[in-house]
Length: 385
Ligand code: CMC
Image 1: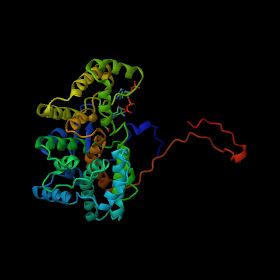
Image 2: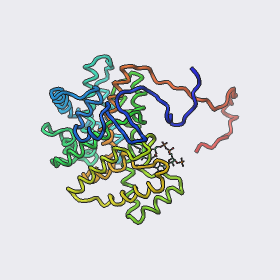
Image 3: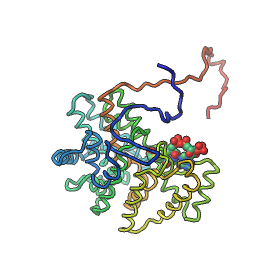
Image 4: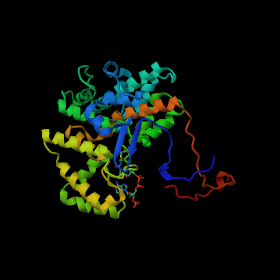
């Protein structure tokens, strides 16, 4: 094999072959299993979308009902997981809590019979079912409250909103939230999915796979950006401040959160759908004060950075929807994780179906043949900062 050129961030380097999703970043196309995201967002539900991604095709009515029933049945958490959560610091970030809980789930199901379809199916169902319950439980328990038990008469999205504050969610709000989950469910080989695939390729258990992906999603350059967008809109504070804010960031070579994408060089198709959902929600419950700032920001950035292909990404409008639904800002990234579990599981299944362990190479830049200095002869030669 010939030595390949090193590309920081593996930009443009194919790391797998996949038939799960497709992105055309020049024209703004996203497809799940060949179906356009706009059509899925309009017609499907999150659980049906998860089924499509993981099992490779749309379910029949009977298959969908069986899948929904199984997921609903497994929503509750073991009391030992809840007990463990009681010890988490209330100031801890919910993504860290989620990562710990996902890994802990593996303690209860540590068999690794990856060639047994029953084991694979059970892991898929358990992870899809319990991750939302973990996020909602941490939200209640960090304030010293009991977690709200899942309700069997509510669908996936409605039940999650209910568990957040024990109030019946409005059907339109539940539908909008369900569509948000669809839009975040999968996005080819992004950082967290790659992380999931690398972990999967060691043939460890799926709970470790999801825990490692959650850890990767948490960073501000990935899933954490939706939270940072709200902080930024708050910091900007008014429409008049938008232009000076953008100009200062450009001069200081600082990133503007919720903009830019490694693949998209036009507005992210998910941002378009999310903006529509935000407007639908504002028509019903009133406009968000930050929305006008966001619109101005989008315009100024198009003017200043459009030539570099910097446009709103999925994280730009999602936070405004979640804020209007009354969801605390630090749950935005865990909600991204609730949705992305579907994509991670799809890639886990695809990876173990044709596995070869990931083991890339590196270009060594350090010295050779160095002497081993005895401790008493060592000087502090380098700055450790
Ligand atoms: N604001 C200002 N300039 C930007 C931005 C931005 N948000 N994003 C990219 N650029 C500029 C960057 O300064 C660079 O300019 P130049 O060529 O003059 O040095 C050029 O565009 C290329 O940037 P890059 O950092 O090399 O691009 P990348 O492909 O490595 O990074 C990104 C992609 C998403 C990490 C980056 O756009 C970014 O940091 N955005 C802000 C954080 C964000 O919104 N993240 C969510 C990403 S979408 C959802 C997800 O994946 O979770």
